[in-house]
Image 1 (tube, rainbow, N blue to C red):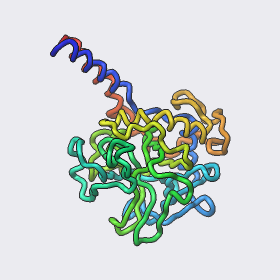
Image 2 (cartoon, one colour; image 1 turned 30 degrees about the horizontal axis):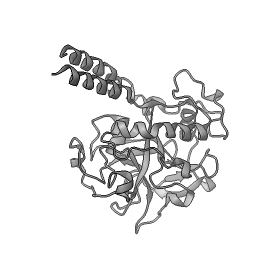
Image 3 (cartoon, one colour; image 1 turned 45 degrees about the horizontal axis):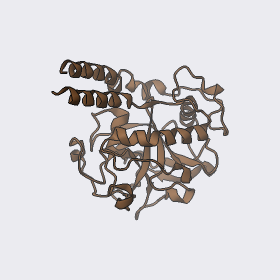
Image 4 (cartoon, helix red, strand yellow; image 1 turned 135 degrees about the vertical axis):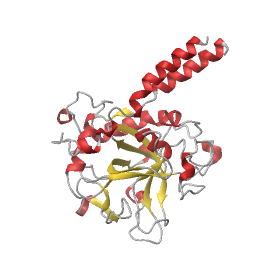
Amino acid sequence: MRPGSVLVTITATLFACQVTAKDVPSALKAFYNKARSGGDCTGADALQTGFYNTERSGGQTTYCTKYLPTGKGFYLKGPGSDLANMDIDCDGEQSSGDGRCKSSTDTQGQTRWGLRHPEKYGVGDLNANIHPYVVLGNEGSYCPTFDPRTVGVEPLSIVAVVCGDELVYGVWGDSNGDDNEHPMVGEASLALATACYGPSISGNSGHDEADVLYIAFAGQEAVPSGARWEADSYEAFEESITAQGDKLVAKLFGDKSTTASGSDPQHATSSSNANDDSDSDHNEGSKQNHKSGGWRNTIPRLCYFTMIVLIALV
């Protein structure tokens, strides 16, 4: 291998090593705990209820605003301490990828909000292997239905996803249609699910536990202003929306920190009541510690050894 090409490869490896999932900011972590420990979402807090997290879950999942400031967005909330699970969506552009989407038995060649102006975005549709998109909204001949646009959430706007002990940003890229017996919720692209739970995820194998928090932000400020829709990797696209996602989280929850380590959620300031009085680790041991010692913890070591090998080739 020529020295010049090795240097380029080392630089790319260093960049890839730096692109890791973010720790959950302390105030967002407090909101996560509060949402889980707050019980069912009912009454005025429920924008629409009656959705299914799984075919057998009983239709008790809700588009919820509980503990959020009025008009600022919503999240998916199941009964009791449940939030939502993460099934896998492989719709959209079918090029690239490592073959894991091929196991999906429900793949369509376009997403609900595909990039309808290719000349503007540089790409014709979202790609589940690259773009971390979330499936929100329910439309079809079933009942109930829900359109996030009715509460100010814009197509392709940023969605914050708390999965395990990590924060990942996606976009609202697809909607739930008529392909199930019940109106379903809790679905994301293969790229987003892989960022959360590693390469064991595939088109027909997602994350079953109802411990995932999806927060959709209302308003034009949530529409990505610098997204690299034409990116050829998840890491490149995610990096292009992360700064804007951080601003949305900080504005909604009043916490500008980028890590929950060593922070006290009760001392985080906020312009709302979203993060007050809750530092409970409700059900955290069984729902979140599956990440400990997981695949992401091996990335820095793998990067280190990769760079050693590359340098030795110079």
